[in-house]
Length: 444
Length: 119
View 1 (cartoon, chains in turn green, yellow):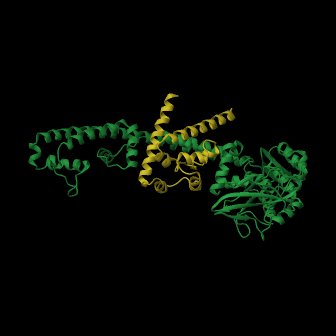
View 2 (spheres, helix red, strand yellow):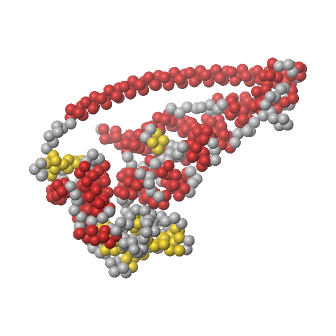
View 3 (cartoon, one colour):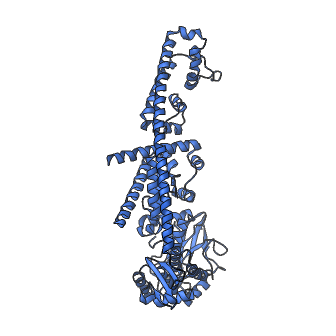
């Protein structure tokens, strides 16, 4: 994708409504284009995420393995995921690793004595009891009535081992309890501090709101229109004077702000008339939804063609026709849903295009009669030069570019600029109206 | 001075996200999935920031998760996923997803602490 993502595509990417193939196409472009990444990235959001994740990780402590997890680990009863969880924690936690070693040693001792030497409660008949079951049964054997237990020197040794292990266990638990208490105290202190910080921040916000209210201009504003635009503000006062715009564009801006709509060239109506409403979901005559260019003028003489993926399609071919329906360019077989014309098209000429999809060995063409042609016109060189100049001279003004693009018939570009203007002036009825005047043109 | 501070903060947070991505790629794949597919902060999902900051493209994220590009692109609008959905993808229980993510976070926290101590 050579050209930058359109504002329409950016919005769809942001809204997460792109189809997988289109999303991957857009992502391929983003991976190579810092300009478009900057258009998408909300720097404040990126920084907030960085700070938040960092804070979150800094507050992450170790959560120790439960006794049951350690016992199951010793007897090899963990499934692969649980085993990975345990291994991962044991790598980081010497305390749990030491407990595991203790349990392993104890299990080895127990292995030396068959379960018959002590009472096992939970084992199913005929099944060898698990280590955990044997361990749980041990206190009964230790304190119970089995004479064999006490008469066996080996089991006596094992019981001594058990007592030592339990003592160690108790010490570990005590130490862990103390650590938890310390952590809890720290958290409570932090909580108190956060409460104080929150109160201070709330006070500051209230103070700032007060100051803002005092700074607000009186209702008797000298302007009939004031729009945030790029780095500054464009205004129109009651006497009809425009400010915030280079002099060469003041007339066009004044006319637009006064009429509250943007003029488009007559050629555009013809293009839209030929194209009808093609964009959007596939329907009769458009088995493949064409995304653009349709019913618009394009700036580049190497336009980019985009369409929506068709289920089951394993390739696409784009063909461009002149006004007499002679083929003037054709793409190779494409796997993606976009193609940039490889030869330059003549400026000031009207063209139409079709895309053919190969589905299960059959060809599916779009658009087909009775659907209208997907027509577009390539902007003449002089106007293209004017627009390139305006981009530099207009000081990144979305209003100026929106007006000039629309006046040249570049609907896609005009919409993109006016959407940006609307984002900077979400409460402005005029910004809504200007954008709608372009959208209405498109929908005929 | 304020602009320089802003720029420094911007660079700092982007470097941190880059470091985080590199570290996530070093985790075992199950932990990688449990963490990345659910990665979020107070502002919502965080995985979406990776392509637009140039840290990792969708295709790179898909490769890190050992998924086909198209499969991952289909999941993209649903991110961050809930634990049950991640469990379904991994063939493990919801609790195991939680534990896998916990392990991942413990490991990342340890590495971050080691770096902070070096500074």
